[in-house]
Amino acid sequence: MTVRPLKRVGPAGRAELDARVTELALLAGDGDRPALGEFIRLTQPDVWRFVAHLAGTAAADDLTQDTYLRAMDSLPSFEGRSTARSWLLTIARRVVADAVRRDLGRPQTPYSPDWLAEHAASGPDATVLVEAAHVFQTLSTERREAFILTQLLGFTYEQAAEVCGVRIGTIRSRVARAREELVTACGDAVPNELAERVG
Image (tube, rainbow, N blue to C red; front, top):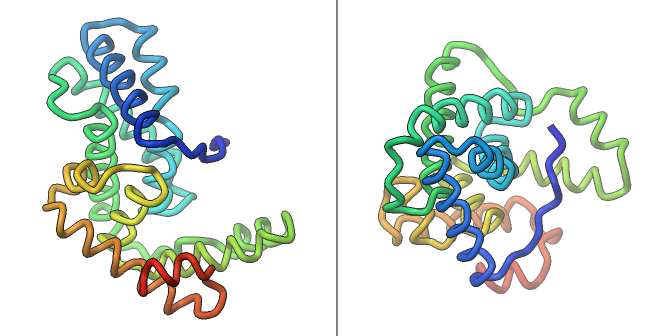
């Protein structure tokens, strides 16, 4: 799957997108197939990134597909009490958890040597990205999940707490600790702005 680049959207734009996605989910739950297609188109990049960060890029396509299969079964009962994006990423989180439980007995590495070689050869900044991905994988699942939701996908702490099924303070704590671990692991390679926000 080709993932579109992240577009920075401000809080007003994110709220508008969340409202649109929720509206589409409700329509899709009532059997509107074009609304379902648009719902998937608007949410797929976030779902793929989320599961890729939690389970690795090799499993992301299958886990994304599993997420949408479960979501389509549940769309008729979706009532819009939360944003559809939060609801969908909660499903994605459960899909990843189920996959981890299923694969617990199998040894896995997050990135194969082929993946590393392919990406290291793809540009001057690619090596930095590969190293960052490796450091990122060292975070605990809970911290990585909270960091991805709030810092990469643009969720508010409240929305991330809803997706993870924890309190807002827990999300804040996990994000802060993830930042500290990333700064410690990266040392001098961390931009000053990030180091100041963490310290």
